[in-house]
Length: 326
Length: 278
Image 1 (cartoon, rainbow over the protein chains, first blue to last red):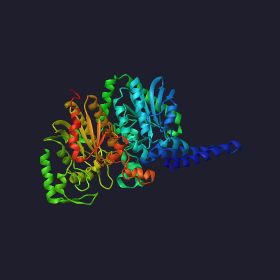
Image 2 (image 1 turned 180 degrees about the vertical axis):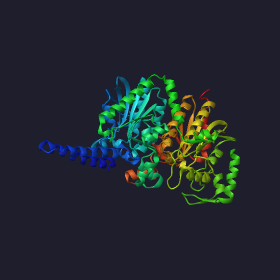
Image 3 (image 1 turned 135 degrees about the vertical axis):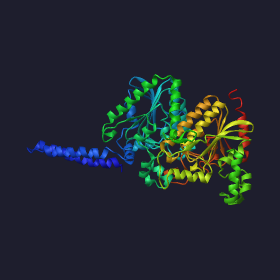
Image 4 (image 1 turned 90 degrees about the vertical axis):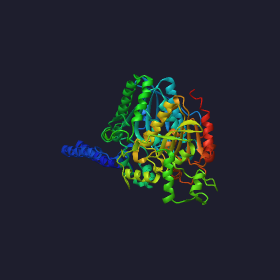
């Protein structure tokens, strides 16, 4: 059970009682306004209590909330979208949606990971876990954008790359490595948005970018908390502990310089106002594209290089202690 | 310290406090360590390839001197990670166990008279995982190799990205990719040798972006770990799944080479790149 949905049920109970009292006071000549006000105050208090300070583990659940806006919702909010299919080699992977689009009049190539909303869609989209053919579609679209001089906007939301037998047979590692290489090469602005789960290398394959935007309650992690706990401690049930340690929240990643911009979510999460959340993410992407469009391609690639070159956490023993500690 | 000195230190240590005998994990043959080393750590009975220490690899490959690079780059503890032990304690343990400062040795040397930028990962240090030191040393190696216009040869052995450095470790996939791309774009030649095991964030970045990809015989290579896949599909995987030979059959790599032929193969392959920037 999703931890956030559990807490939301408490809120729903309040919402139901408030609605009941309101109905009651309409039908009968009793003044219930005090009771209603009191309940509403309690409701607001609970709302803040639950959502003001989410733990990393709660954020993991928020990033997987069943009503959280998904990749396809963002793509649908673009002005125009012309979907392009397939990797030209094996099949069209439904966990990747991509093609030409317009964002506030700007011509772009967009690429999104899509988990699927209901059970049938989830199965068809493989829960947002792309297979190698999905990543090969991504690479094809990156190369297409580079060829036509179009900016790239990606929407990242995946538990990770598909770990199946077929994916290994078709060289999943090579497919992801090729996406990264194509993003390193592309002489066009690249904006990536982390809208839900940023699951490891399978997410990074769409997120080596000039500007990385992250929604407040999204997560982005070297491995899923369950995976990390299994790898380190042989026990996936210690996922909560792993989530605490991995530093996977938007605040952490902004602090590391891995994420460039964090977009606030409505109190209670993106699912409380999907349209406004999507709009804010798209506006942020648009602003970043305008800024990046003014940079000549050579300099753009230079600054992309410098950005990732800096990310680290090592000590340089050849420098003075004060320098390495600062 | 130059390699020959280092080896002397290590060998003398081996003589005094490390067992003289090793048992082959495959055929059970008990082998005299010195003879095993002379046989490039390949079991003379069943040709099982033991995992090799990074400096033994360097020694096996380079003609003479090896100038190490990036030794000033040392790990820190950016996440203040602690589980059963703290991350600095784990690192100290690995340093003592492996006689290495981190999971990769990088530097310059000649193989068959051709100068190369050489990187050798070592599984005995944190499972060869890529953290910020491994990423930084690889980036420095590609940058120096680009300046000198020499080819790169990287031996991979890695369980993937290092958990204890979190997202900073994952970002090394991006960093090494950018460094390799810039190196190749300048007209340089990159070779990777995948050794046992190569998985996760290393296989999904620089390892599979080279011009030529060799795998050592019977090495385990893949993206997801074998256990992860077995848990996902809830069935046992076939014996040869994710082996070098399996990848060759599927078309993912250029060739599988047994260790005794590896150096000569590299010399031949490197020779084709001699005119690359002429």
